Amino acid sequence: MRNLLGLAVLSYLTERPMHPYEIGELLVARDHARSIKYNRGSLYMVVNQLVKAGLIEATATIRDTQRPERTVYALTDAGRGEMLDWLRELIGQPVHEYPQFVAALSLIGALHPDEVVALLRQRQTGLEQQRVGISQSVEACLARGMHPLFQVEETYRLAVLEAELAFVARFITDITDPETGWGPGWAAHHADRDESPH
Image (cartoon, rainbow, N blue to C red; front, top):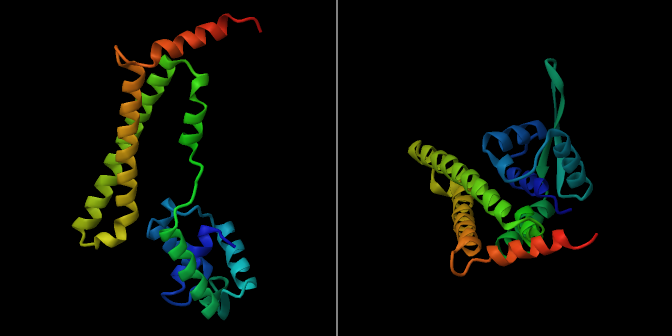
């Protein structure tokens, strides 16, 4: 199985045996749900898959009159090996991904350039807001004494945001530059298409 939520479960269980509810609480408390798609139902499904694969095993059942029975799981040797191999692969080997914005860029010619410029400016505003929010969050965590290692995914997000902001600004210039801009030819193509018989 290659569900990233499974990787999170394996990673958390390197710390100590836990029940799924505790794993879910940690995932939210550590803000890892920003990086790994999570809901409680999918977590229990992933735990069952990891058990079937022999990567984790039940070690105890907690009975509490106030709460439903909870099963505690621990990492197996096979699970530890799988987690390490998987994490090394994700870090060391780039893979082709399918971001929504890239998909939209590949089809962007269907829109009029004036609309594209307006949408790109709208995106710039959203990206700037994200950048401010993440920067403030990182600064607050570091001010509380958190080691930068535990904010490295947010530092990465900031770097990606900076790159995307630079790309969007350059793309707007490519379209709107008075001398070399693509806008007039692009708009003419739309005019020709609109005038052609359907």
